[in-house]
Amino acid sequence: MPETSPHFPPGHPKVPFGRIGVLIVNLGTPEATDYWSMRAYLKEFLSDPRVIEVNRVVWWLILNLIVLTKRPGPKGKDYETIWNKELNEGPLKTITRGQAEKLAAAISGDDDRLVIDWAMRYGKPSIPDRLNALQQQGCERILIVPLYPQYAAATTATVCDKAFDALKKMRWQPIIRVAPPWHDDKVYIEAACDSLKTHLAALDFEPEVILASFHGVPKSYLMKGDPYHCQCAKTARLMREHLGFSAEKFRLTFQSRFGSEEWLQPYTDKTVEALAKSGVKRLAIVNPGFTADCLETLEEIGGENREIFEHNGGEKFAAIPCLNDSPEGMRVIEHVVRRELMGWVG
Image (cartoon, helix red, strand yellow):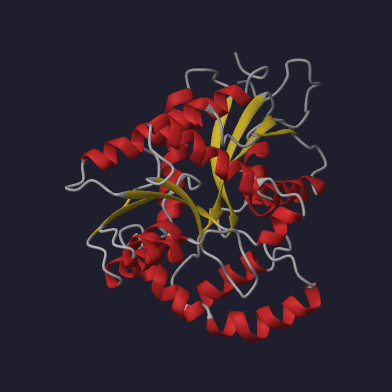
């Protein structure tokens, strides 16, 4: 694309223009597993009022005097078990970069104005940095794609918050679109089911029960009007119906609760324990709400919940990988991006 208009007068500064950006955004990951790196990441994440909706003064005291003193060490050890040693980064960063690169390769032929980039809501690369980078490349229009199939204020909305905060500081703002959630999109449901069937076929056992485990949120968020619970339930139902499984075989649960407040139920860990104690010997867990494997899928499901199951009498356990940048995963991301670029591209 030309960097300057032929109609600009002589001596006018070069102004890149006419390009269209796509920014895919995931949650984030610490820069390293040591205490101070973990503390910095946790502070940014847990300081977000969308994530922790309690009195800010009370939470500031709890966060700074208790949480950020005690949690960075143990969490760093958890991250160390899944860390990408070769690239010295968390797997979420590795996978999200791969998704952006494959997306660029897949849609580069659609329009030569497209520029694909990626960011993290917490940590690096940050949303403001990448929005500025896209603008500097001449992107006058930018599609932001929060990589969450189900909408929650603590995920999709906080991506928008950060993006709009960055826009406030721009003299010449690009036009912004935000991709909506795709919890019931046919392409997503089919891709999630195809991936699950492929991984189940590769196991040396047939699970008696499969849990569709989604990241939990406090129940109070649901009561305040957050649609997340309903969208997770619809995803699980559509997957179950597409797979032809009974409600007993394919069940919805919620994981990763934090603090003493009641969260969305049934809890994944309590369900795993109860299933094992009831005599279930073969179990698989899939995470349809995560577009990429991370601490919550690799360590919490593949590690902690495996131990819970086996400790209580279970024998065969499988943590099913997320869609990641697999062909099925990219089918979904490409579909969402192409759909949301309509009117701008093609």
